[in-house]
Image 1 (cartoon, one colour):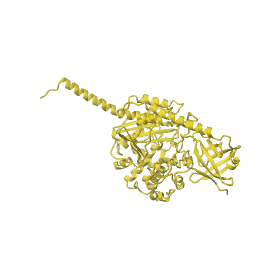
Image 2 (cartoon, rainbow, N blue to C red):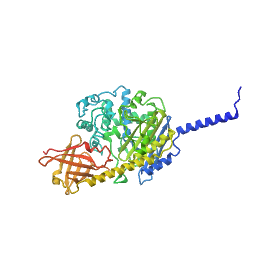
Image 3 (cartoon, rainbow, N blue to C red):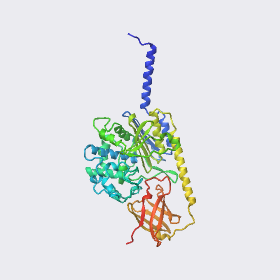
Image 4 (tube, helix red, strand yellow):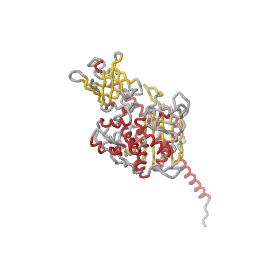
Length: 524
């Protein structure tokens, strides 16, 4: 019998220890994560962040950083609730997937057969649109078209918004290109009550939150009470970070109204990575087949060049699936989504082949914060050399803001500031109608024009003369993006119509002013 020498024994021990160290490095979070997040909070001026990491089926981190509200020392913890915005969309597709599993609907069912009264602008699209089409941003609608029906908070109901789809002109042909939208995801959510008799809100609670034990999640911030563990929204208003009001998103719920925390989102990530199977017991939320379908590319996205500091993030492929974006990073497929509503931005990222999931929730509108943390974590688990992602994302943000400021400065310098409106101000006053939004009122108040969107209580703005027949709507609620309003005149000097456009190049696409065409209402 051959004896093992002391040197061989030593070598075996070293190998075992090295393997253990590698395994540990592959499962534990970055050792410097606390310091890295603390630095990101400062770099991007974000009050609070929550992070969850799932690896190999286990929650290896669910932790809060910073504070729930600036000026208040109450800390963020793993149960602090944040608005997750469009990360809600994956919940809506998962809810629909449970109904597909039950045979109550199919992804390719025509929408009009499942949602009576559903009509798009084009009769062909009305007939051909499927549930799958609602979920894949290829309807032909423009980027964010119709978002002003719900954002800022409006009085329109979900059913009223679905009805108004018939008045929205397409920006491209059906299924020809990607253009992100929210209204059709809300429409997809409305199929749930049409099929089950249970509202989307209750279905999400009963069929996702309860089975997963997501006890700190909800579908509306109206449920918050004083003393509850929730983060407050923050935004830079007139270049200063401020606490802003909570936006109510009930009327577009299936597209973005869920609020959740790091601990609960970790449970969501676990069941996603486990292909729909519960990790702590027998049974499933949805089948493995549905999981595969939800992660299968549906709409091809263009791949553009990244700014130099982010060149390493350029993908080889980019697609949209059912509630998830797909792309690659260092040879791994990423399945993820971002979310953004007033005062909150977030990221959920899955790396199936690494059995890894990362969630970053923030209470300020600074995407660089969650993105730098995300890639710091991914680089750790991919065993990549460290990159100062915070510095890189900040450099890109600073450049974008500088370019936008320069563009606005040039526009200010180029305007004919000495020009006058063609008509007396009183002639611009009156009620205007847009085909899909509805009534917008302009009135003369103390010698100046004031514009208000009749179904959006916070949209009241002073019309400041810009040049000729163009005015700038300077909203009194400074969380709303300012807009140019340009009037066109008829041959007889009356007003033919008015068009709008965002003033800032960095305005969020949900302020889709460009999709409005205001026509003077007929006087009765």
